[in-house]
Amino acid sequence: MALGENDRTLIEDDVVGYLQRHEDKSLLRFITCGSVDDGKSTLIGRLLYDAQMLYEDQVASLTADSKKQGTQGQDIDFALLVDGLAAEREQGITIDVAYRFFSTEKRKFIVADTPGHEQYTRNMATGASTAELAVLLVDARAGLMTQTRRHSFICSSLGIRKIVLAVNKMDLVDFDQKRFEEIEADYRAFAKDLGFDDILCIPMSALTGDNITTPSDKTPYYDGPPLLEHLESVSSTRQEEAPFRLPVQWVNRPNLDFRGFSGTVASGSIKPGDPIIAIPSGRRSTVSRIVTMDGDLQEAGPLQAVTLTLEDEIDISRGDMICGKDSPAEQSDQFSARLLWMADDAMLPGRQYLFKTANNTVPGQVSKLKHKIDVNTLAEKPGKTLALNEIAAVNLNLSAPIAFDPYEENRQTGSFVVIDRQTNATVGAGMIDFSLRRAANVVWQDLEVGREERAALKHQRPAMLWFTGLSGSGKSTIANLVEKRLYDMGRHTAILDGDNVRHGLNKDLGFTDADRVENIRRVAETAKLMLDAGLIVMVSFISPFRDERQMARNLVPDGEFIEIHVDTPLEVAEQRDVKGLYAKARAGEIKNFTGIDSEYQPPRHPELRINTVDMTAEEAAETIVQHLTDGGYLSA
Image (cartoon, rainbow, N blue to C red; front, side, top):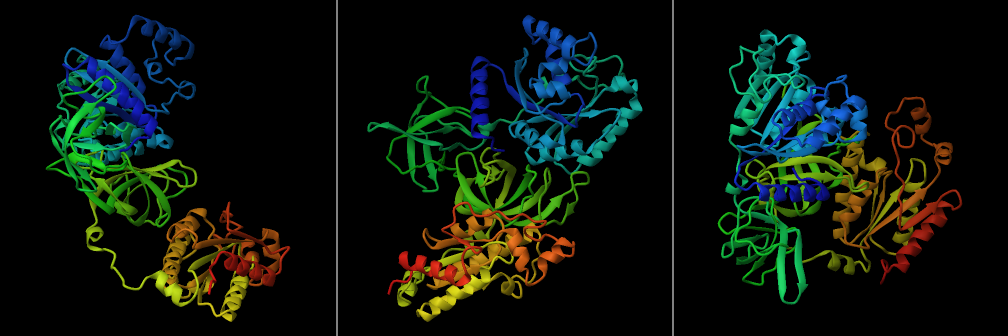
């Protein structure tokens, strides 16, 4: 799973420094997860304390804080060791992901304490994205919760194959063997189809330290290892064994004598003299040097930030990927993927988002929501949109090919995050399953006659006049007058009207947000084909969302999209209401009506803003025609 740029850089810098200090020991990355108040932070605090991995000043500070802010009376509150945010201490929950590095005589560890609250599922997914093992806590009193199941499914989706089910707070059920076995049986039945290779169930009490670092005499029915012993002995996945991948984040060219390609090694290893292939160009060369701030390296591996110089001058840019010669990454612009939605606003298929991989950001859309996944039963269920914390199997359609590996083969190069184009917020995270076959089979057909030739024959420039505004604002009236004026001038036009299109092309769509997005997507694609024919196209739709209007703009060359905001106040549109639609919407007879119970997002910077309060329809039409004339669209 791709992290935010700053988060990833900070974490990886810390990791690399830690590894350099402990090169003689193997590393295990693991997370703690589960529902709210299952004891995740307490477990990590107790683990570090009992294993004597805290400095004296840390113990003194923890003891003092426990007396002031703790929940255990005069005893140490181990949760305070990792609950660093003030809001977390006040609420008694983990909000952010807290990373801790520690080492025992046998192994070094990086542990991520992840939030249990449903609102912060996105943070849990971030912590799981680099983990090899998950310690999943369950309150012995409550048993499996929805978050237990959701976190298990996310762990499975993110490639974690080793699970420790920590049945915590056993002291509150008198270490009852029957209760422990019930929870273990329930979990194994739920997780049987999640693909975990190893599930170890441990009865424990993080508060009292039972089965944390040493076996507890209170659980004679449990003959397995305590948690720390298991963590020290469990096998770890070696990313070094995967094919070499360096996502290029920067072309380093400080002077004419140096040209290198900088990035963080995602997987595999590389040495000077090793042959490489650059994707997507397919150009080949050999590594000359591995450059870092601390000097050249003889070998580089996962998580190391390096700059490679090559023997040959080949064209490589940010967004490309340097691979081992015999194992190049795949390329595609259409994928089958799994998507975890992380935003309050629903995911709408057809809406344009930004898809960010390790080193590339590409516009695209969810072209199809195949099915949602019920985290409680793992059953597939239909759906048109994705709400907060929902998970689905989807098809993606990107505007340009990217280099990738299936997530099952490489977690670093098979993951992506989804970014909202308007707010720049991260709204989703996903894992690529495979490229859709049609991405390789469908190619552009070269045509002898193009849009320029067709437009020249008509003595005009193609243009898409996009009329947007509230119902009753006068869009269709003005668009009709513009077309009539252009017809009188001998121009070649077409008009797409919202009501008319819903009688044919879009008769299967309703008025939900998802249907409105698909409505505009189809119309924009149709209008684009008309522009290819050299026409001037009038598109008259409410088109309430900025994202979809931007999507339509992105479909055509610069200068061919003319956004016209028919700006009419809501009260004026209601007064006109010749169809009686506003009255019905106010009475609750029409749902999802723009301006009443569905949002309208006015354009921020339209090419033309038409105020129909101060201007007649005829004057508005003349203004638009004059804009076309001044812009050279009607040149003879």
